[in-house]
Image (cartoon, rainbow, N blue to C red; front, side):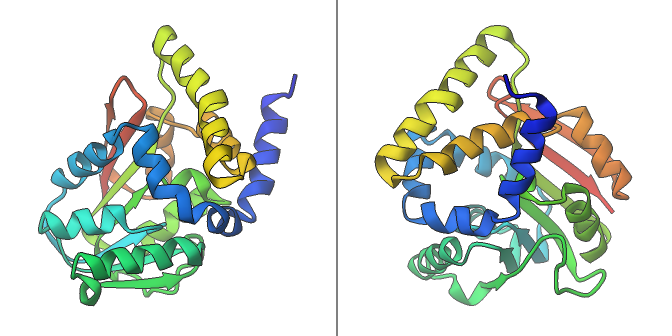
Length: 240
């Protein structure tokens, strides 16, 4: 049986090519997310955005197909949004989605790494990230970069998967992520490996209080975490 250290090493190697991984599944990513979550992922985003204060200039890290970005605009929580991601194909879908909703002029898509963002210190009123932090090749470096580009008193909001603690929920969660998700992902995208990675990345991610300690070490304060839907996902909020 593969040890946790070996699993983390394997995950680390996959994260070095994370942009290519998401490029491969970009075309089916949104549809499968909504289908397999029974649209609960939309509700999670709405709830997370609702907690934010309105901000003029927002950075959405790992913007992907722009679901969180568009929700920020729908709720009037941002006037202008800059998004950064390592998957050009995911962002291409996000650009089409922004055009469909008539908000292309309010969103800028930048190709780049969360660990080396091309923005000046104290550039943004708020920084957001939905389901992207666990994909950083170096999570702590990414969090420090978020802190660097955020203005003093600015707000951070991260939405990320977590691992349920209740035995029955955890059993169902493992069954879903280990078997159902890779099978259906392979059926629709012909890329079982990418969806197997999603399962492994969740299991090795330091969720809850452990992740809050990483936020503190990155320089954030007033840190809070709010588990949703039996702990399947968690909202993290903090300030600079």
